Length: 251
Image 1 (cartoon, rainbow, N blue to C red):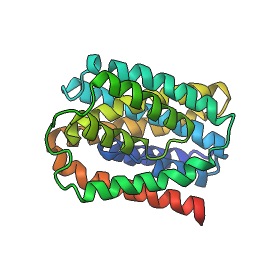
Image 2 (tube, helix red, strand yellow):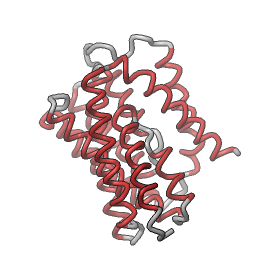
Image 3 (cartoon, one colour):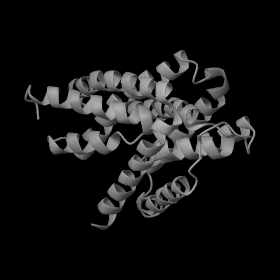
C-alpha cells in the first residue's frame, strides 16, 4: 500500500473522478473502489476519500463562482444549513445503524432516473421556483447535509434534481450550486474523519492533485457546453450509482 507506484495511480484516479464529479457527480464510484483495492481499510478509505474529494469540490465551486455560475451570497443559507445537517448526520451515523438508508436510497435514485428520462426538457431553462430560496435551503440543507454525513451515495444527484425542481434552476446552474453544497458537507465529514485518525494524508494529496486538475476541466466543460452536455452524463452516473448500491446491498 505504501509503494511509490501507488501515487501515479491515485493521481490518475483523482483526475478522472474530479472530471466526472464536476460534470454530474458520482466520482466516489471510482475513488472508493480504487482505495479499497490497493489495501486501505474501509474507514481509512472513507476518510481519505472525503479528504481528496474536498479539493475537487472546492476547485469546481471556485470555478463556478468565478465564472458567475454561482452567487455565494444567494447560496449562503444553504451553506450554513448544509453544514449543520452534515455535522448532525456524521455524528448520528456513529450512534445508529444505517441499513435502512441502504434499502431506501436505490429506489429514490431510480425515481430520479425515471423522472429525468420522461422529462426530456428537465433543466434546460430556468423556471419559476416552487419554494422560496430560504425555505428551500433550510429544508434541503438540513436534509441532504444530514444524508451526506450519514450515508452519502448519490447526494450530488439529489441536490441537482432538487435545485431544478424546487428552485427552477437550469441543470448547468444546479450543477454549480450542487458543488458548493458538496464542498460544505465534505469539509465537515473530513474534519471528523481526520480527528479520528482515518485519513492517509500522502495518498489523499496525490488524489487531490488529480481532483484539482479534473475538476477544473470538468467545470469548464459544463460552463461552455451547458445542459445538453450534462444531461446524459448526469443520468448515466445516477444509473451507475443505483446499480452499485443495489449490488452492494443484495449481492
